[in-house]
Image 1 (spheres, rainbow, N blue to C red):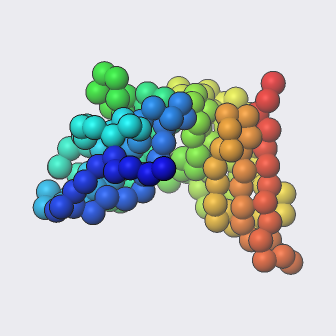
Image 2 (image 1 turned 180 degrees about the vertical axis):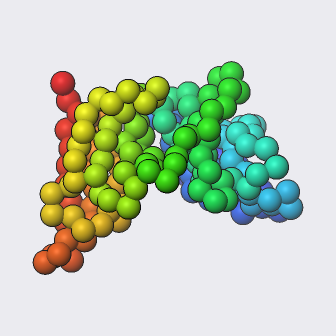
Image 3 (image 1 turned 120 degrees about the vertical axis):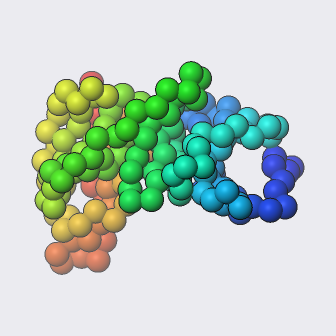
Length: 169
C-alpha cells in the first residue's frame, strides 16, 4: 500500500533518505526561501528544519540514526546532531576530501590521488586503505552496511569495475 507522507504546494522536495533505523526521512526542499534540509518521521507528520536559510543546502544524508551531514553550495559540509541541534563543519582541505561516512568511520581521499584513508570522527587513522586496485577514477561510493565500503569506477581496460573494502574486525 502507499500513502502520502508530506504535501507541499509551493516547494520541490527531493533526495529522500531513510535513517539507518528507518524511523526518519531526511530530504531537501527548494521553496521561496531557497534550498534547505528537513526531516520527518517515516510515518509522516511535521517537518523539522535541519538547515537555516542563510546557506543553501542542496543535499543531506545520514551518518547514523541521530546525525546527518548536509552539503551546501561550494561543497561545504556540516554534521548536524538532530537530537540536540549541535553542528560541526566537516574539515575538507586541499590535501583531503571526505569521500564517505558511516557511523564513526570517515573515508578520506587524498588530494588529486585515489589514495584513501579511514579515520574515526576525531581524525585518528583507523586504516590506510591505499589506492583501490585497478580503478582510474571513483564514480560512486557507499557503505552497503557498517562493515563494507563499495567503490565503483572506471578502469584502464574495462568500462566499469567495483571494489569492496571490509571493515569487519
